[in-house]
Structures are given as structure tokens and as C-alpha cells.
Image: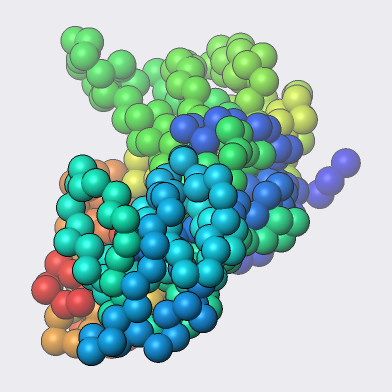
Amino acid sequence: MFQIQEWISVQEARRLILSECHPLPPESVPLSQARGRVVAEDIRAERDLPPFPNSAMDGYAVRAEDVRAASRDRPVRLQVRGEAAAGHPFSSAVEPGTAVRIATGAPLPNGADAVIPVEDTDDVGGPGRPLPQEIAVFQPAQPGQCIRPAGEDVARGAVALERGTILTPGALALLAALGRLEVPVHRRPRVAVLAIGDELIEPGRPLPSGCIYETNRTALAAQAAEAGAEPLLLGIARDDPEDLQRLLDEAAAHYPDLIISSAGASVGAYDWVKEIVRRRGELRLWKVRIRPGKPFAFGHYWGIPFFGLPGNPVSAMITFEQFVRPVLRRMSGYPRWERPRIAVHLAEPISSDGRETYFRAHIFYEDGRFQAQLSGLQGSHILSAMARANGLVILPEGVPALPAGATAMAEVWVDLQDLMGLSGIS
């Protein structure tokens, strides 16, 4: 039986949680479904890329020694013995005093060691033109000129993509060029998301007096998907221990890699998470020195990692960012789970109660530096400030306040280049 860690710092909580979560095993997926996924093992090239020497230009394949003395004043004339096009190699060899017309990407004929661009000959170029009997060459060539060697990009047997590579369009193009149909990637985590509360009503239904529309499943599922997971939205448990256990058992029955609930993780008369989770598993962590988001739980339910997030929507989203997202990124195999953090100039003062505090902010680039303006009221129920934010300003634990004009660290949710581009900076 583990001892429950209580009232610990954000860093201690994150370290404990990450120590118990690991990358998921690999699966093979088609390239068309692999963008953004993480390569699960080193991928070695099974062939050279390019697979054969080929021309980098439209022109003529020649022997460099045949045109060594070529110039505008004294062109060298060569007999044209045929042509090589992409997908249609020249079947014979280039012999002394001859040339083969060649298209970009076509295999280099045997005997040739250079390509003369068409612009350096008396060929006028253009589609559909007949094959000339001979050409005049106006420029000399060095061996290897305008030729792409076999294996110049990737040699057979070399590592084309390392384990941990995030599959961008360019990486997928490389795999396709190597003839791969599928790629081994870390499996996406499956995340079951449920909510707790008698007052919660599904959006779209009539709203009874004293009730509110349930928002946390929508937000948490979107955050999970953005982190690379596959969310599974379950129902709303009532403020009743048996109903909560029923829904948690239903969540576990879907074989998720992680279960998230929101609300019920505090110490109120209707907060049953702690008791119910311990019926079927264990709690490892209870409360964190974070604001917003102190009522937070982590453990295992039927052996599945379980996160009990706060019920207030902003608290739920911020604790997801700080504790759940890192786990999902690690499970997905990403080499880094951290959001970018940058120094920002505060446009207004911030203060808190000594806990590590996360302020919703609009971060922008102006006058040669990143600046931060709070995006609205900072109550843990204020969704409009969350909707307007593009990052979080962090007030460290033990620091009660920072004045306007001070420098603070901020966690950014957008690409830094895009952030700078918003002000026309490049």
C-alpha cells in the first residue's frame, strides 16, 4: 500500500505522476494516418535514396572528358544516340563522342559521368521536339556535374528516421520515397472522460432552476485530443457514491489508458472521489499547492491511471495542462512534454496566496519583447478569460506578488513564430 502524498508542490506532483506513466507500445499505421505521430523505433532505409544515379537537369548525358575543351567559340559536337526519360532508361551505354538526351530524374546511362544542361547546347528545348542527330556543346563539364548520386539522400542501411521523431509532412514524404506503406508509431492513449454533479445538465437540454450546463467534458476531451490522445466521453455521475462507482466501472470497461473525472475531489459532503477510487484501486496524490486547482487527485482505478480534477472549469483545464497533458505526451512517445516557456513583461501587477499560481493571459510581442496582459477576471469559474488566453503567466510558489513592469515566466500555447508574426515581426 502506497502512502498518499498530500499538499505537495507542482513540481513534486508532476515528477511523481510522470514516474508512473510510460510510452505506450507501438502499432503500425498507414502513412496517410501517421501525421503528428511519434516514431516508435529507428527506421533504416532498405534501399538507397535516390535508388540510382539520375539527372538533376534536362540536358544531355555525356562523358566529361569528351567536352573538356568545349567553349562558345569552339563548341564540341557529339552524336546523339538516344534518350533517357523518367521511368524509361537508355538501354545502351554512352560511348566516346556521343551523348544521350536526358530528362530530370531519369537514370544516368552507363558510360556517362556528367550532364550538360540543355541551355549549354544548341538544342532549343521545349516539349515534343524531335531527337536531334547531333548537338553542339558550349561549356565544359566536370565528372559528377548535374548528377544526383545513388544514396545521396539516404544510403541503404542508414537510419532514415530516429525513434522519437515526430512525423511531419516532410518525414512522411521521406518514408514514401523509401517505399514504406506503414510506419511503427507509439499508440495514441485512450482517455475516458466523465463529470460529476447533480447540478450538471447536458448542453442543448432545458436548464432547470439551480442547474448549469456541463462544460468540463467538452474542454477536457478537446485538450486530450490536442495532446495527441483519443478521448472517450462518458456520462455525468450524480453526487452519489454508487452512481460514481457505476460510471467509473463503465469507464474502466472501455479499456482506456487513462481515466479523468472532474469535480468530487475536494472535501465537501458530496465529494466521493477519494473513497470510491480507493474501493477499486489506490490514491497516490491528494491536493497540490497550485492555484487554481488545489482539489486534485491522482491514483489508479482497476490498475488504470486516474486523475480526479477540480469541478471549476478553469481549475480543471489548468490542472489538465500541468499534470495530465505531460502524461499523454509521454504515453504518445513525444520526446518533450513541456509547453514552451518564455520571459514576459507584465502589463499589470499580479498577486496570489503563496501557491504556484497560473494567470490566464494574452501574450504578445511588442517593442522588441514578449508582453503579457491578463485576459480577464481570474476566478476559477471565469471561462471568458480562458477563451481569450493564449498562455499562462506563472507566479512561483512563495512569491506573493509581482508589480507591473516586472518580468515573469509564461507558458505559451501557440507557436512562438506565429506569436511574433502577429505584430509583423519575422
